[in-house]
Amino acid sequence: MLRRMYDWVIRWAETPYGDWALFVIAFSESSFFPIPPDILLIALGIAIPKKSFRYALLCSVGSVLGGCFGYLIGWQFMAGFGDKIINLYGFGDKYSYIQDLFIKYDAWAIGIAGFTPIPYKIFTIAAGAFKIDFIIFLIASAISRSARFFAVGGLIYYFGPMIQGFINRYFNILAVVFTILLVAGFVIIKYFF
Image (tube, rainbow, N blue to C red):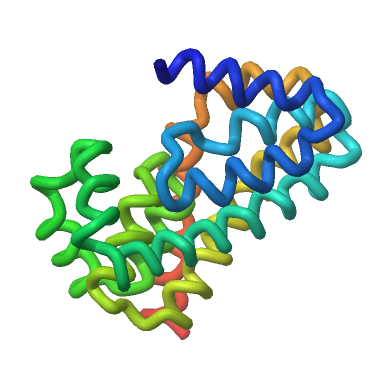
């Protein structure tokens, strides 16, 4: 089933509705859909590299708005929908662990989940359920999601189609390395400035 969804997402790159599909998929993935928008972002960017930053912006805006929808699900509809979505992705038993992450790290939990391959939708729903400050949630989401999608868009813009295989093969490693560098940057700022 996941493979069929993946193929369905990729087919949108071959239509004139690819921009809209990217926005909708980015929105949906941040609250309930299993396939990350990076796949369509890469396919569209490879097709027209000079539009890579435009696609990254569409993806970022759609994802942040979708994250707000996920927040709403957790805030108002946790018992009806939120629990089902979290259980669908196998995180039901980790729910209290995610709550501990929010208590301890607040915006960092959203920032890291927004950039890395960790299912962002779990954190958006949990943020609403745990009543995390919405402005902090929104800022952390905007920074992390934009960093993720603009990094992909920038690589495609500067390196063109030859970067696609590299991104697909090493995306998880690249995300972890970037997250470590991001956290290290904040630690340096906190302790030295």
